[in-house]
Image (cartoon, rainbow, N blue to C red; front, top):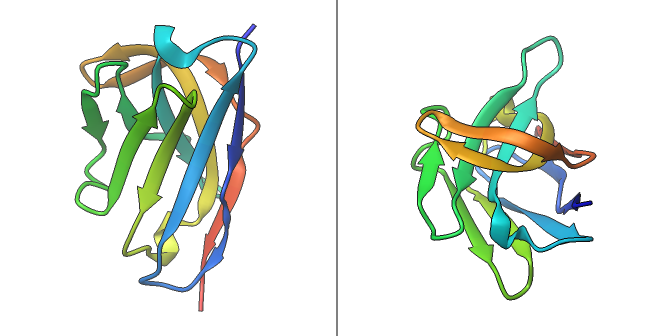
Length: 120
């Protein structure tokens, strides 16, 4: 059974940066595409980025050019570098593992989530 644990969330000022990490345990992440979803209060959950084992990436328009996803297969960890953060990026961010599809990722496993708050 694969478990995903996110870390790196917190409070940051507009224009600032944060890096989220997603560590896998119980199984290797090699078999999966890994992605990030987020959910803001009162809004639907949104898939924002994912990466295949081979390094193919997908970004939603809302984060393209500001967020970068990467994976370290040796460390069984995926990262989401978030730059130029905006208040509208405030949400709970979830790491997922699943299957890459043309429009993003089809999740099979979910992490517990980490809060990101962008505020002055």
